[in-house]
Image 1 (cartoon, rainbow, N blue to C red):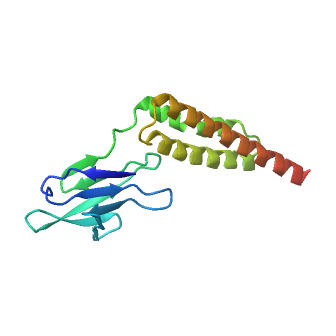
Image 2 (cartoon, rainbow, N blue to C red):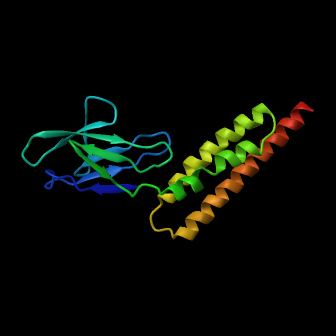
Image 3 (cartoon, rainbow, N blue to C red):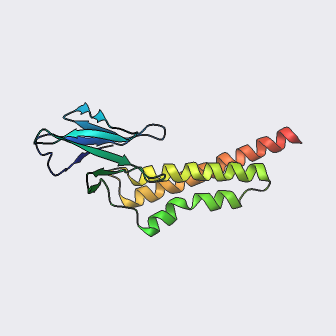
Length: 162
C-alpha cells in the first residue's frame, strides 16, 4: 500500500509512504526516490521548499499496518484509527484460539497463531476497495483457517506422542 502525504512546507515535492510488510519497515519516498535516512531507525530527512531539511519519524502499530508519520510537530495519519469494535473483532482470534487448546504447548501455539491471525486481520481491514462485509468474511475465514491449523498441529502432536 502506498499513500501520498500532504506535508506543510513540502508542496514542491511529492512525498509518499510505502507501508512495509510483516518483516519490513515502512519507507518514505521523495519524488519517487527513497528519502535520506535520518539519525535513527525509522527517521528520514525530507527536503523543505525553502531548501532546509526536516526530520520525519515513521511509527507503526503492532496490529495496525497503517503508520503515523510525525514531521516536526505535525502528525499525519494515513488512515483512520480502528474503532473499539474493530479492535475487538481483530483481536478475537487470540482468546478463541488460546481457550480452545488444552496442554501448555498447544496453548502457546494457540496464542502464537492467534497473534499472527490478529496481525493478518489488521492487514485485511486496511485493504482498499473491499466492502465491509467482505472484510468481515475474510477475517472469519482467517479465524477458521487458524483454528484448522491449530487442530492439525494438535492432532500431529498427539499422533507423534501416543
